[in-house]
Image 1 (cartoon, one colour):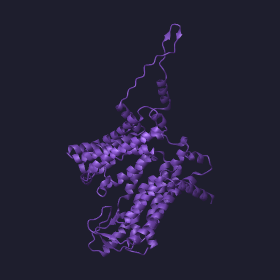
Image 2 (image 1 turned 180 degrees about the vertical axis):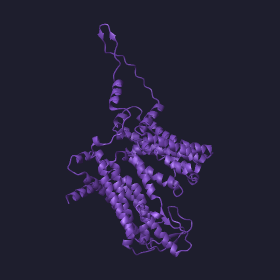
Image 3 (image 1 turned 135 degrees about the vertical axis):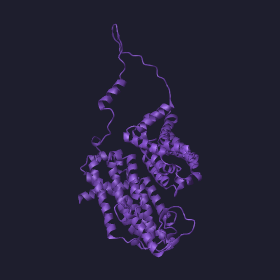
Image 4 (image 1 turned 90 degrees about the vertical axis):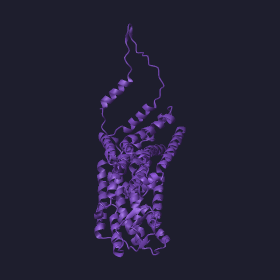
Length: 530
């Protein structure tokens, strides 16, 4: 009983601290708007030229389809900071000195994540009820039918996400940008549509069961229905026909599968205990250095030691003339040094994959390189871009850096140039392919994307003094834009489709690049004045 009480107290304290943050309110506001947009047919689910009546079954299921996709993506990055916050504030070191058990701490943090998601789902459930009444198509609210998708589909998936967020924080190499990319790859795999996965563990969010139920029920009552199913924000040209869908038949096999998903979440919590170091740096798995500790100390000693003086006739003189200091500035050299800082610590396989993507972009057919290779190419350097503008705050060198000359007009342009150089080099193969095929419109869109990404990273890094804001925003833009360019062409900052190019998106992102650079300069000026 005392253990359960301790876990609840940890979860309560962490939850109360988290709801005071602006990131929680922002995510909650975005989720509520998403719920409104779903029921206002802005974000819609349609089956060819049909949609369901706005009854409890349709409103609850469609809201669940959208909100689960949103929270499993965006919510992961919202809750993946609970251990890091204790580590940075020093609370972790205090906890390490208490008799608190590791399992109690891990379960308490996981429960806090679950509570955050549960509160969001509860608010969305209330909003869905209101939206059904405002829709006016079905005035009777059946609470059990409306809330069932939230309980059976959304909640188990978010419990698993909560456990994964804590697990990623306990594994050293999964805490940062690498973990963000790994989770995104896993999520994209489980979000892929497989009709045979209905009701199985691989149907992480339960979308396939809802989708198949809608398709089967409409096929029985409408002979002209061709079996299409689309989740989109693009409004159809013609008004959609409506049909009365009575909801999913929640069979026992599906419910057992969702319970097994919760069991997997508990298993991940116990797996986290293997990697949890209890905030002891000595137990962390450190990256192996190229040189040993002794050789590193030896090199530092050789650099700091002055050359020995020549013996004189009447003894030894330890005086040594130093070369006069020369004040020289080389932007190229500073850019290369910033590149070295970005690339420091990356394993050899990172370069091998980057080179493989470079070659794949050059030799692949143009449609494949444009729609498949390019998004992968510009998600791979995410760990490099995420350090732009916030490295000095993370390593507490900001006071030293900001007191040196040229912190604004030298160092800031060098950081941006290094980030832009990363984008240009990693995507050079695709750009050459565009130019060799004479596709200058795609080349211009590629250039806009190559300049926009480092500008976004620098501005968000300077303004937030951290990497998380850029990682979350960029991953969401990357997911909604390049991966869904035909549905959301306005977010296609890479020029994946001709639709976004003809709509003038490259010019818009060129303009946004300038605004982001101005914001970065203003933010750095404020930091220098503090």
